Image 1 (tube, rainbow, N blue to C red):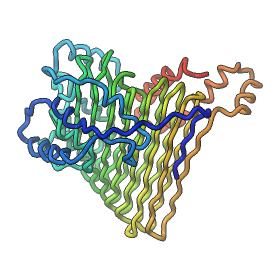
Image 2 (image 1 turned 60 degrees about the vertical axis):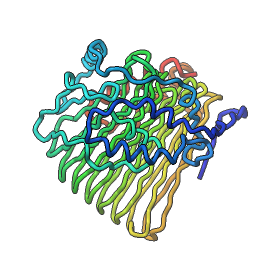
Image 3 (image 1 turned 90 degrees about the vertical axis):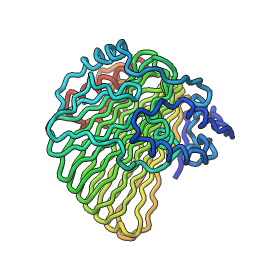
Amino acid sequence: MTITVKANSDQADLPQASGANELNDLLNFAPPLHHPELAVLRQTARDRLHEQTLPTPRDEDWRFTDLSVLRTRTFQPPIAPLNPEIVAEVQHLLCERSFPTVAQIVLIDGYFCGELSRVDAAGVELLPPSLPAIAPPEVFSDLNAAMLAERLCLRLSGHFREPVEVFFVSSRQQQSVVSPRLTVEVAAHGQVTLIERFLSLTGDQQFTNTVTEISLGAAAGLHHVRIQHQSPTAIHIGSTAVCQAQDSAYEGHAIDLGGCLSRHHWQVQIQGSGSQTILKGLAIAMDEQIVDTHSAVLFHAPHSRSEQIHKCILGDRAHGIFNGRVVVPQVAQLTDASQLNRTLLLSDKARVDTKPQLEIVADNVKCSHGATVSQLAAEDIFYLRSRGLDQHQARDLLVKAFALEQLSDITPEPLREEIEEALLAKLGGSLP
């Protein structure tokens, strides 16, 4: 099912295809290789990229995503990482966070910053960067591997009451390509909260191409919060690959607020029976932002469950894209899967393309999917006005309720309050 909705009849043309292969141009800006352990991963990815091009609208997965801003931006070679002035600015930025963590990891422009990181807690182990890749081959994950400066690999063992927090900060030094990569292994029976934050210093115009790989052992549980709040001039393309063993539980929250172009590809491989997967996404885009979410939940074992709810709020001339797949082969009997995309359009010029998909071969399953696109209902506004609110207050309250419902399960509480504050700041002044 594919739905394309724009609030008025002024339909915009789809982006035009380009036959040019700009991948080689981007590869010219790869940073020097500092870790020989990454040589094989980088070279393997480079070999695959020789046979690929940047996606165009002729590629089904990129049909609605306009990459022209990436194609037209002029990038520069990277300069020396971890400039002391930048580190000081990032340190000041981190001081604004207010809850305890069991470990804090900071990467600036893709480089691990030991000065601002803490990874010495019991149960937190740094692994060699030569671990096998989990993320499936794809043009941007290959580009990430081919341009790796560092790869951070963590093994988390035990029950952690406090979260592990990872900051990916892009500086404003120049227009360069940043390729951070994080690999997390949660040991069997482990219980962890992982927070990923993608932030910018003022004026960031970088292209952040990130990959996060997560492996959950048997009966392990991960509460994962991913917050993308980069500068409005930044380009962000991210991939999260999750692999679940038997009886594991993954609960992911993805919040997308920043970037002139952002895309998050969420892929979950359910390898063991009795597993549970919950995906909750919220994207808010204003001005001429493009925000794209692709997801795939692939069942490879029976008796598992997945639930996905993705919401978009689009104002001004923003463009939202959602493409979600649930794949249930014959082996995945007794699967219970649901998927729902809900979009709220705040402007006549905003547009959304949504495509929820179910691919089912197994015959004894319970699966559903759906999509809704709406504007604020006149009767709801009328009701609130009848209770004493003015027009602006009524619309403000309805939009906030639509957004904040998606955050109710996020922990710790100070993080949820911080995200709510950021959402409300973005929505403030954008409401009609």
